[in-house]
Structures are given as C-alpha cells and as structure tokens.
Image (tube, rainbow, N blue to C red; front, side, top):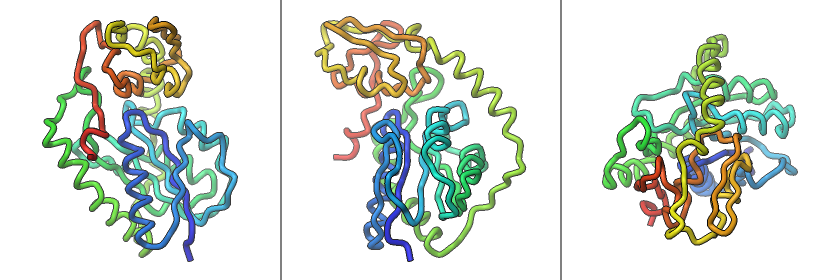
Length: 257
C-alpha cells in the first residue's frame, strides 16, 4: 500500500513546479502523502519512499543535464514504482521521450507512466509564439484533469508503452550542441535596465548554475548558462532585457490567482 512518495523536479519558469504541486494535490486527495523535492533546494534524499515521480522541462527535446546529473548522483538503486513527466510548450504529445525513463530505469526503478504535458510556451521571444493570456489560463486550468487521469492510471497499474531500445543518439547530439551554444546565451542576449532593477538578487540566487553575479545594479554573466531562462522570467520588476529591449515575461503566478 502506498503511503508516501516524492516528486523530484527541476523547474525554470515554474511550469514543472506547478505540475509537481498538482501531483501533490491529487495524491493528497487519495490520502497518499507526496513530498516536493526541488533539486535546486535539496542536495539529496534522506527518506525512504514508496514511489517516485520525476519531472523536468524539455530543453532542445531533452531533459536538462543538470536534472539527469542530480538523479544519477542522488537516487539510490531501488525497485520502487515511478512516474516520469516532461513539460513542454509543444502542442503535440511527446510521450516517446525516453532519455529520462532510461536513466530512471538504470536506478532499478519501475517506470509505470512516462508522459509529456503541454504547458504555456516560455520561449516566445526566440522562436515561438506567445499564447494569449486567455489561452495560458485555460492551459493551466485544464492540467489538473490530466494529472487526475495520470494518478488514476498509476494507482490502477495501467502502464505506458516505453521502447527502451529506441535510439536517442540524434537527440543527444542536438542537445549537446545546444548546451555549447547556451553557455554564453545569457551573456550575449541579456542586459539590465538599471532604472527598474531593485538589486533584490533573485536572478543570482535562483540561477541553477551560479552563472549570475549582480552587485549594486551591475549584472554580469559567466559562461555556464543552460538556457533555462529562470533569471529573465523570475525578475520581479522585469529589469532584465532581451537584446536590450523589454519583453513580457512569463509569470505563472499571474494566472494562478
């Protein structure tokens, strides 16, 4: 009988964290406790759990390396059941993503559900179109129904079809190239509007790779960016500019009131 589980996640702009919280809500309604483990705030796991959920955003069609590295370092070998979910702005289902399930399976875990969950797009200033506020709100509102169905299938033992033999070499090559490009992404594209900056240091504190240093409204980037865009979207005063121009950041909290 399942009593307590853990949802282990990495989140940039808040989409993956939102889904983690929905899983907690739905499992709580089943009288099953679920701990939230944000890899940026937790250096490991010090409890025994009956099951695990692993959640990640999708970067260049792959889970971020920072998340895979955390799992490989901190998840002990166990045969417990698990759910794997990917968040993406892609409107087409991406349930064929297997790199993360492969890594989870290598830890002995039984991946019962592997799924992709569409979320509002947050790369709209680069390649994609930003949804309207109404569309964003509707997407977020409808995700709880999806999580309810995933939890129902998991508890009933319904399984995803996962082809572990499928090659991920092509996607891995593309992602590795993306990481090389991303190293200087922030340094090339982001700057600071000193009139808007309040020197709160949220960008520095929340950067997952410690790529940011801000002091007295002077913003500097190193070469360790992974393209998560947490800094530019989390800035409370919209002081970080993209190519020296302001843009409308994705503030998920705005749609959850």
